Length: 351
Image 1 (tube, rainbow, N blue to C red):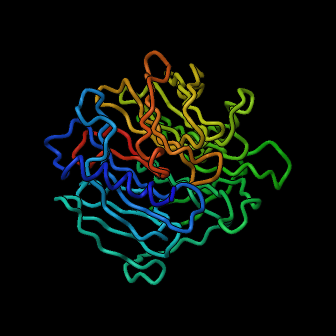
Image 2 (cartoon, one colour; image 1 turned 120 degrees about the vertical axis):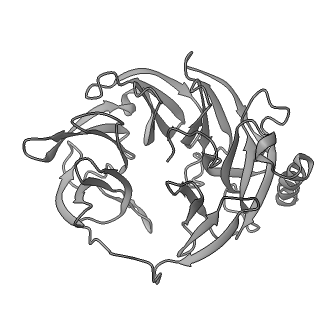
């Protein structure tokens, strides 16, 4: 009965909200949702949700697009022109390509592997590649070695440096001070925008720590060192890094028990921790309000129990406090895998 009610609840919300019309919405966002926990009857989809607190339909679902119940949708990425969106899957060997120039979005399914559009493959010296960041100015790409998808106890500990123009693997670096196998699981890497020489932040998921990679122009190599330790503040599972438009703040999510952390990065080589705001279990991706004063944090990490709250936390980034939550999906028995602003938004940072 509970499963039936959950599906009915989100269907009703969509029906009441009516058809999606970008001109009528103040700050719509896309979310990927799925049934919370391991249920026999599953539901997955893309939903449009209103984030503007002054909008009459704040927190409501404006429209939704169903997805196969075994897709386990994971990320949405836009192309540079923002006329295509790419939807990744953990449950199927396929990539979904969405034409986002008009609603409803039209979808093409591309099999992966077996795709005849693959241009090249780079053999990695360590397993489980996940997070990728590229700096065109120095022709370098950093790739994390994270976790065995079939064995969550098998964790990586390395960053691989690649030259994108040639596809050549240049070096591999352990990002841990512990003896190997350290199991730190670096999960994401991000170049700090506009910094010269370049600096990248790396989130060690299992260790709960930030590592910093600094470009050395003379040797054309990176130096790596450990920095902020979230475990010392009672946090774990460091995940994403987002930067504000001014480039003087970085925001880092931790999934356990679920926080958003703010850092002053006026000196990007010495980030200074400002505050941690409690979100909810699985704090993961976020989007900013148009003025950059609020963050909307999606709380779920691949539907792991204890880290799949399903809510969206609304954070005041100026005051460093939580303003409230959007529980639309959580109340319907669902959880959210990612959140993105719609393609027409002036979004200065997206992951």
